[in-house]
Image 1 (cartoon, one colour):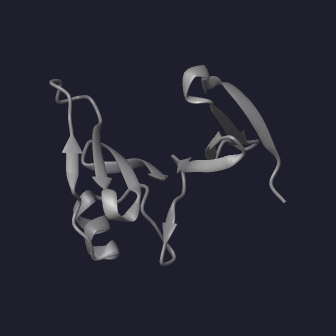
Image 2 (cartoon, helix red, strand yellow; image 1 turned 45 degrees about the vertical axis):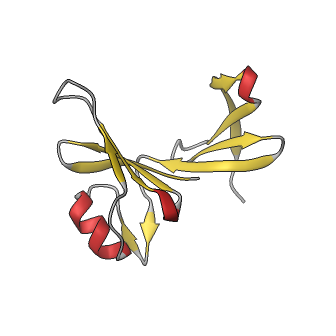
Length: 105
C-alpha cells in the first residue's frame, strides 16, 4: 500500500486533470475522471529490472529495442530535451545527455 497525497500545484481545471504524488515524492500520477492518465518519476523508472533514470537515450533505445520517435528541444542548449517513444507511451526528459525523468502515458 502506497500513501498518496493530492498535489494541487499541477491541477489544470479545463483538462479535468488532478495530480497526485506519493509521500516520498518518488511517483506522480495524473488522473482524469478517476482514470490514471500518466505515471512519472525522477528517481526510479524500471524496465526489465534496470533503472532508466540516469541512462543515455541510446542506452534506453537499446534496452527497449525501440528507437525514439521525436525529440523536442528549445533554443537554449541548457534546457532539457523531451524524447518520445510514441508507440510505447513513454516520454523522457533528458538533461546533459542523461534521462532525468520518465513518464508512461
